[in-house]
Image (cartoon, rainbow, N blue to C red; front, side, top):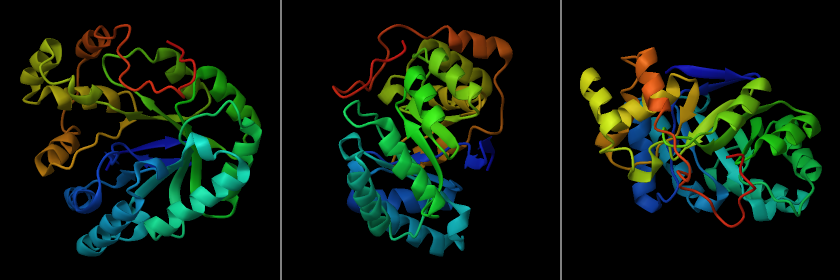
Length: 277
């Protein structure tokens, strides 16, 4: 599995997103992903599936003869739990549900303007020093929040997990991440079902014997952006992984760049920060 290196972390170049996957479906999806060759699993306290992710992970490791260290596991603490004591409690519960002594990456899931960022980063960075998180980072941080976080953090931040897909212009925050050595993890990389059927992506796909979705994912990994598409369908799991045996040309990358348009964001909850775009 190809990896992206960032501030000391080596993050597998594609992962399985698990939001909305529940119960036995989630367990089987994680097991199938590991069997197919995924080595990066993403969950969060808010997804209410950490126990199922943990069960799938442990069964999958055993079935595939893998060690815990072979799989990169990410979880997150939600924006309503960013005060130090709440954060600590949430992370404790996450590790208990996952049945893990440590995760590879712990993220602030969303910023919260009502809790000082210094307080949250203090307990986040402590989790790394305590050995309960190998690496730490943020999610849904704007350029301004990122600048503040990098100044305040006393451990290196390794990723900003944000919405990225061919229809959304994220150049400002992508540039900010790169300037600080952070990787970018892309959620909703397939724009929640809007990729299939796009004329440009379908046409480029035909030229490579790939689907529009595979082209969208390849477009991201070729920029060293780490997509975490969510699916429980074994065929889709396999297809999403089959993006490392071809490359898009510079002209094709530029053409896909041209698909970006205003109002293309698919995740914009009431608690979202004021976005850069």
